Image (cartoon, rainbow, N blue to C red; front, side):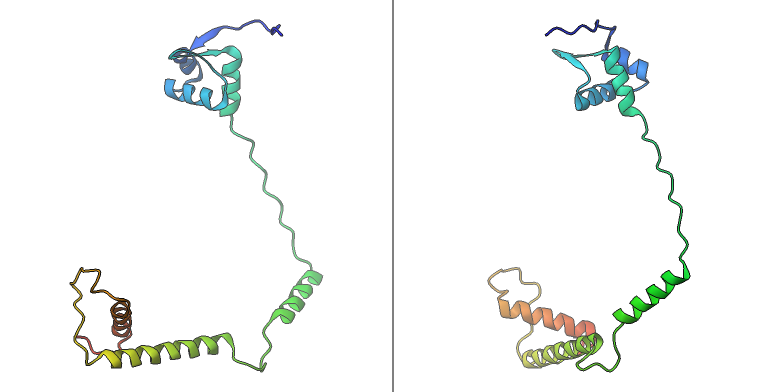
Length: 159
């Protein structure tokens, strides 16, 4: 089916760029991205309709107006406070609080680290400059990690 729309003026990429006040590469890139150009070998050609389509692509979208803020009513505030009371942690509930559980876990970690450091205290020191992968067994890696942690926390005298 043949198009009944007559062919408008045809522009080269340079002419289209000058008309839109863009660079040649920019016009070609936009034309290829949005399919509003024609190509003949290495030449890119633009019709009047293509330039109008590119111009519409370049247009800035309208800004969305800011929404008006809604002031809280007293009934909303009372509802909010009631929800806060319902979701608040109850005092005196059985079991440990989150802070106590974390503190207990940290205490256990400290004690385990101190015990491990005491266990390895009499062993020969690690060769930290050794790059041999066979030297760094799982036990030595764990020992290095725990010794480093103990030094950071001040549980071990620095050597």
